[in-house]
Length: 216
Image (cartoon, rainbow, N blue to C red; front, side):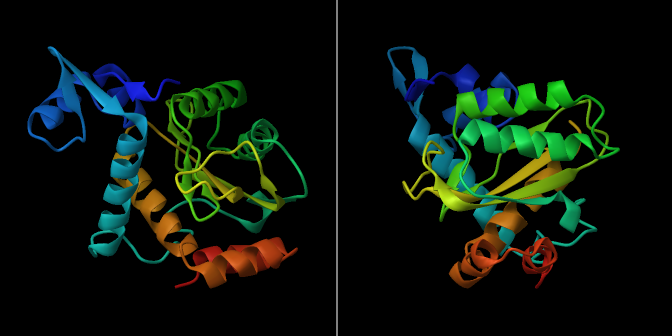
């Protein structure tokens, strides 16, 4: 993926139409500029813009501060502990976990969607957190799985260059935009607490990790 993005690539990344992306760029809502007559965007600026928007929604009061089972489907059985693994291995294992859910109808389609999303732009949001996510028709309801890696994932790039150790994979139906964004915001806000991250990484108990992720 190039460091400079076209308006088509930006639209694909944030899951909006090209028309909407163009309108937002024209209004100055998207961080970009024109080279001649065409819009161009720095990948790092767009990634930061998305994460800032998600964080702002989580802090505004419109998004739930609690990450609960009513917000998305997460169970202790969908939390896996890994020692040393590459980014591709972690993503594949999480897809396999989600594929056991009744909400995921096509495992290969989910894996393809997750990998294509990562090729577009890394979902490492900083603080050692990765949030690979996708919305596709073969998922019937929002579902989540978590990998806790005892060793940092060296090839999982992140905004702050801190190696990812906690990976929260989220899959949703294509029309679940609001629930999807609010869940990403909630889990991101929860994991920005350094004490919570340390407790999760140090634990070998999926039930305890689940309680940390779903607590107030």
